[in-house]
Length: 540
Image 1 (tube, rainbow, N blue to C red):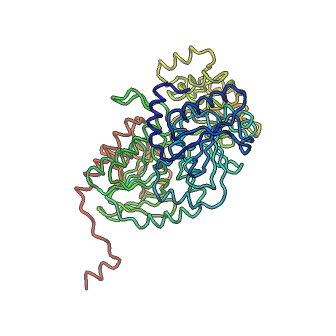
Image 2: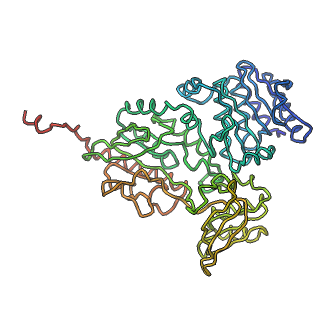
């Protein structure tokens, strides 16, 4: 199961084990069960702190095959219903290390919050081994299960448990169930899980955030632009805060990144981990799992700008840099929201394997759309690409590859009008031929939407001329140095009216805007604190 390089790497990791770990395999006569047993034996041979234990009667009701990673000291049991290879191999390695006493990379405050959760929590996570977002969810829940004995978690490979997938109508991964009920879909961080479970956390966080001193620079968003900006301002010695809903933003959902200079290729999750590590090398006050609801400019130049969070907290700073990025654009047609996660999907890499042998559509003929069609064509029965325009905007090399594949059809000048389903899942879509005006229907099981980006600027939309200036498309208007129309407020990356939306460009934009903010700060005197009765004080 493991090649020599993987064995050597894993053996090095297992040297960090402090307490014994047991591997329990619950098997049947299937080929996959034999593979799992072989994997367990290979792992056990690499460390004297890892042993094989026999499945007991209490394990007979387990899914087969299942690998159980048990901490001998704590008694915690992490379950992998399937073979945790591919993207989930990292989840297996971390399960071994954490079960064996290796410290988790979590703040003590977070660990205490998990430990103090009341109640019984039985989590089940349906994954695909090709999904790059699934490991984050699996690892978060595994850590919680080790910290709190009232929390249990099992990773379920949907491909090996197809009956369950069909019964529960799982059509997107990761899909998390809590105590038998749907809990979440898509990438979810530990902080987000805690926010849903610990209802009093938001109020406690708001009180803590309100007590923070004013910053020199407050960065909103921790994608490539925000991370670059935080590093640059921190290096200048400025008191820097970074508030974000999740580190990396949409980059965490990106698979192949191939346009970095000096690096042939990388993946989104890996890049996000590197971004976070780099930012944490500096004295940056990081506030995660926070969403901004409003930005209010200073009452006078050189004064403090206020950033209000959705939990009610207000942060203050001499300058603010907005780097909230963008998200996938939706079709906004009837049925899209109803069948989201039930056939309507946005990531072909994560959800594509769930449509193996079925007919699907890709909406959009740009690079992302044609790349999605090519990837899906190797998995599904047939792909129909619907493009609104009369030309494809994808690179010519991608177009040629797509047209050379026998199971891809491309329909031009097609306007999607409705997602059709049977109440449980997608069964087709309706579109209008923009040349003839004729309405047509395509029968299919899945729809992958790939039609561009929408800037995350809803929180900036205010009545009148007092807010940050936005384009008609909702993008922040910026100058050469990333400055906006409000003194002290800067912006960078995909959220701005930059003509090109690329990760590598967003990083440069973040650095540029950070230096622009630094220049603003050194040239702008600090405003005197305002006094409510300024005239009376002066007369006295």
